[in-house]
Length: 180
Image 1 (cartoon, rainbow, N blue to C red):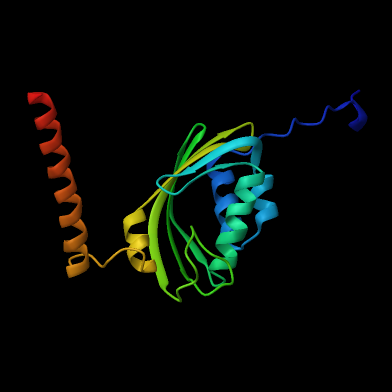
Image 2 (image 1 turned 30 degrees about the vertical axis):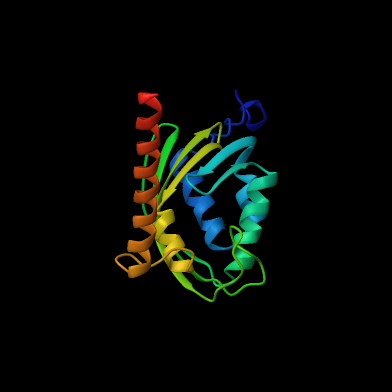
């Protein structure tokens, strides 16, 4: 007759990509860096394209500490999660006011309110985040922070005109060199 002591404990199941994604983004929303880092495998990598490359735990923790210092009222909302296997796609919305004591991406606090949407593609292995590829509109972030002129403004037209003039000059020089 089998007894309770003869029963083998059920092996713990690793959490799936969707569960880890929910926990990770809830930790971001709560500004809980320790919890965020606990969900990563050591050496896991993240890219916020056009902005920063991160590695868990060090640069990941440092970057998010700075973000939360720069935007003390930072809010984060998950709009949708789709997961299959080791992958989870998370569509999100973030907002905050750049009033904190910290610089953000080299900028001093401007007092600007920013609102962005983006998507992160997580790869989860053995219940830990292995990689995160994050996409958002960096140009729009720059506009909202005051680092780039507003879309359609005279400033934007002047900026685009100067880039186009440089491109034309570079092409003219290339053609002159080819003639030799």
